[in-house]
Length: 210
Image 1 (tube, rainbow, N blue to C red):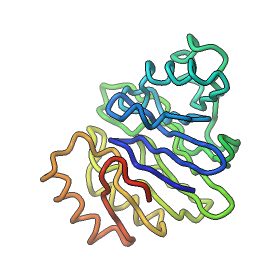
Image 2: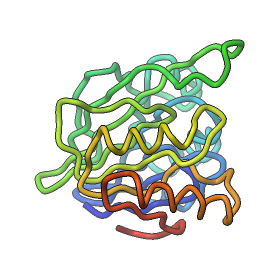
Image 3: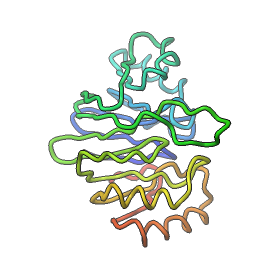
């Protein structure tokens, strides 16, 4: 499993196939080059670039997209490419085993309705990686090797990121959901996570493969 972090919340995972998670409008479209399958955590534009997914589906009619049922109407115009996923469901995508967790986006404000959100544990025979989308849902039934930790968003506090990493207890952790931060702001948050998360933590540049 080779994991490449793209801008903001997009991950590309290469192995038996190519699996892309959350190719949003803040992320590089090149993340989708050669993609066999796409996982969408939720419908917000920083996690789902509809035009980019449409272009990828046009180039590869065999592309499969997996998302919560609430997201599927947004993908209906692209043909029969999407499969609904429910929390607790296990399925295969691009040769990887995937388990969905959670179900709800973190609260932004009491006046803003909460939408569906799924976290995904992605595994091959050797290792796994967990990405939570816009939530701090802990996958309590497994040991996580690599965790992606949200770093900044309107729906979170840094304390929650630290406690999330502590609760998951991964072998290593990397920053996610970081595009809204300045470089200086990211360094401040990174410093706290390095000291307090209880695991090996790093904030890598877009395009870095880990």
